[in-house]
Length: 316
Image 1 (cartoon, rainbow, N blue to C red):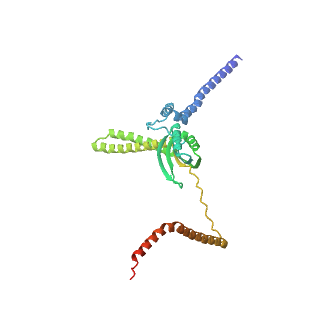
Image 2 (cartoon, rainbow, N blue to C red; image 1 turned 60 degrees about the vertical axis):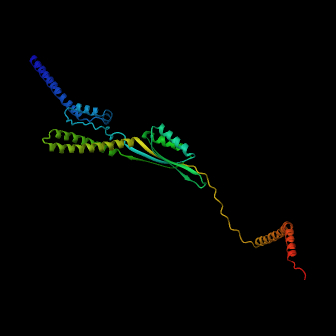
């Protein structure tokens, strides 16, 4: 009886040892997939945007099993594929103003308040129907993109009436990302060409490699310039302001209407004309007898008498 009990206890102990051994072996096997999954989990996009190159290095360090390529400093910001889009905004607004000079001063103040700048300006005069010259102006300004709507709202407030307004936006995100990719590839190519230059055996090889390197560097500078242009254009919006003075209203001259034919009126006008003619003749005779005759008659009579006296022939 005791021997059977001892054999039973022995089998129980052996079973416990076997189960514990299986559990210990299964635990590492179950943990291995999680470790391998952690190795291949990519870093979150937000971390890439906030930390830049540091986030890329940390992700490489956290996955030692992955191959890590060279990371080049491009001199530009990180890709904006996962951030806000780059939009080039522009607007043109035509304002009817009471006084052009005051409107220009207020627009200049708005530019300063919003942190913008004046790109160009033009002023000219035009003569109106009343014979006066009125002042017109066109100003092109650049304002930060975050102040675009605020600047437009304030510009509307300086006018008597907004005659016309247009606004547009151009999404250049794809161009920006494409240029960054080209820049990374060109800079990687430049590094390889530099390594070839170090291994050049002859002067001709060095000159050819140096010429290729100069061409790559020219392309790099050109792409950097385009990237900077897109960054500047998307960070500052362009607004063109046209000022037109408020002109006085011109009262139109009424068109004369033709009078209908009236024989009675014609007879009256003819009678009045004849009456005025006779009145003129009578007035002339009165002037002659009252003014001309008294003045000129005595001298004429005297001259006539003297002429008769001296021209009379003596009697035979």
